[in-house]
Length: 138
Image (cartoon, rainbow, N blue to C red; front, side):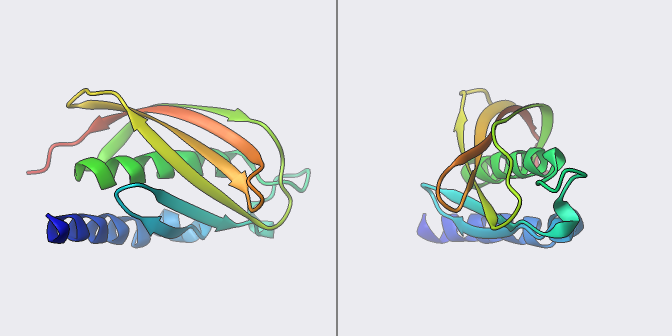
């Protein structure tokens, strides 16, 4: 089982780390284990909005990715987003952001999850929930 789990985590890590969009934004997959998936992103000028704080789309993208990563690490199959709801709580202008997720629901084809984005000190910046469809592997 350990080898299968390691292979799964390696496969999921590879899929995300070779994604052009994932790399364009600068995400770093810090940890992928049975208990936790952690995603980080340095706040760079290219990611700021016209007010000088992190663009809301970055929070949404990070929450979408962290929930997807967590699901993939649990079930192995790819997922696609059906619905995503984001609550923006606080702005950030520098440093890095960190995301974590939890998954719930017992559906075979439809899964749900929640993701949070925090700053380096653990201050909550955004929270979101999503519904995802599991894609059957051929």
